[in-house]
Length: 503
Ligand code: ATP
Ligand code: MG
Image (tube, rainbow, N blue to C red; front, top):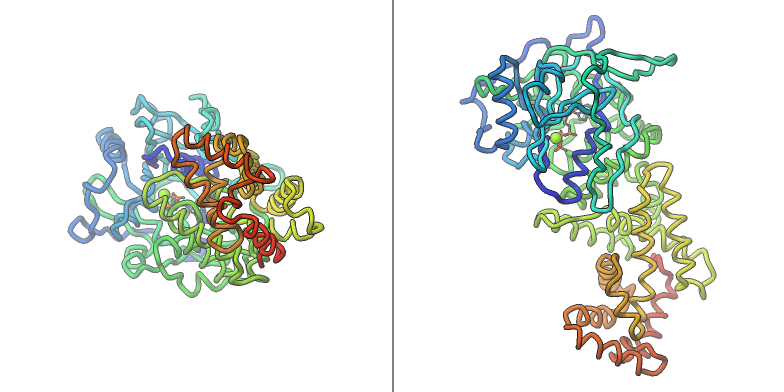
């Protein structure tokens, strides 16, 4: 895998590799399985080396020169075929992890149950996996690595291994696989893949593409088809339902009827997936440039209510409500930021997603307490807690959501010098963005947004005089007053009386 940008979602995407994908079960006795690849030579496919990351090419060539097989595999081959820039480059080889390490100075082995080699090129990592035979560990059992405030992985999360760690398969008393480093060949490895479109191998030896499962035609037809029996594949790993939705959203592929059909009946299985893994999947769905489409697909496939139950329940009960429109606008803004290569954060995402549920929590309280910071904090806490059993939001992000909501009353009624301090708050920018969205959907006063906008654009002297002017106004609160705020403030109260959920 190659993560090229030091943006939040890129390093995190790197970490998601810790939640290893499981392997599909190998073909049952008597079941015809893919055995021989169809080899599509260079002139039969559009993949050009000029579009492959130079770091990935370096790894592929080094492996090949050392006498090993070396392939690009998975989503990068699929993406190169349809002309989009791959998010990461994964390499598959017959070299054992230790052999890979010996070839690269800048390499370390990670993952206890599913050993992989990470080859480092500055910020970038190319993930090199040895072909696996048959089954794999259950997904997501390893705790998700922690992430620091900037979204970077703590170094120890990479879990470097001792060189003499045993290579074996371990099973606990319930048959659960604890460790699986049983290596195989490429025609066994293909069974670990989920969709045919994700099972193509690009061979650096002659630039051909190897296709065991009909993935080549499926990519050309933009069709998403699970390898093997769909129900079995979803039962093995329910996250594949979310992956189907994500690829449908991201690539615009059609989910094949047989692959789509079991989702409605089996979506409940997602409840058994570790919440840390579902947190990772949520970020992949919403923070990689196609959040609006992901939302639409999740809703259409009945997956939103399973992945984010309180969000799903809210929009089912309040379709088209101001909080849902705020969420969609916020997701569209986030998609734009990703496209412009600007950083995005889970804090802001969860503030958007939980806006409706938080509003409902506030509405449970007596109306006169709706603007109290204490009520707001309680409501955020309740909404996050509701989600926690399904999607565990790391604390640093849920605290960020709290700050964003707790700052709203301060933003709506700025006071003298305190307004200047608010400007310095680490969550000011995110909270202000939320205020702007709220105003757009008639849930906050646009005049206040203007005032903060002007304050931010002012130099320190102007800022001081703006805050002094606030302090001088009757009641000491003047942003609204300056703009005819007494009246507006009452009107805002009027809006509020419709409930903070605005539903
Ligand atoms: P993208 O990187 O664009 O999100 P991808 O298909 O490359 O998509 P990754 O999560 O990077 O997805 O996984 C790389 C490959 O590993 C996949 O293409 C697929 O072959 C395999 N894989 C990943 N997750 C699973 C899973 N849950 N079940 C089976 N195979 C999987
Ligand atoms: Mg990938």
